[in-house]
Image (cartoon, rainbow, N blue to C red):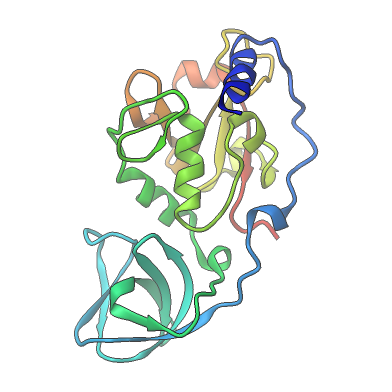
Length: 233
């Protein structure tokens, strides 16, 4: 299967295989139909943070208190406490059942801030490891997967996930697609995550995971389309 996928990607990069930008993936195949859970913090002075990282800002601290589980990201729960929403380490929350509603409360800014943690990770063709090596679509898939959102694996299939948005409508977390084959015929061969302020996060073949400007002449020339995964209702 890996050889088949590599062959398909090679055809895409050489411009030998064109795939339509239509027939969007169904929402149900990306977002699980989770229901949410109630949990309880298991200590005192527990920090609720703005992003799923111990380096992010502290929103508030709580003692033993009921929380509503909104989603998850690896070792973190997204929770709601007294109308405030944020992230608490899983080890600090006891939950009765493992069900979530990850997509309804995840914000694009959280996707971006999480992705920025991996800036500097080397580019590895076919890679899926956010710390040791990824390619462009491996980066986008794994970042979304960390929030329990299952998009496609390859750039030319990810373009059919979500709903199309124009360049002027871009919001943090949206996917941006490019034809980097040398002639922009609309054949998707590269993808990144819009980070706001005209920048996007992607795995560059030379620089690895990095931020680049959409106004860069190269990306202006090779831009094809964008899609929105979050808030797809």
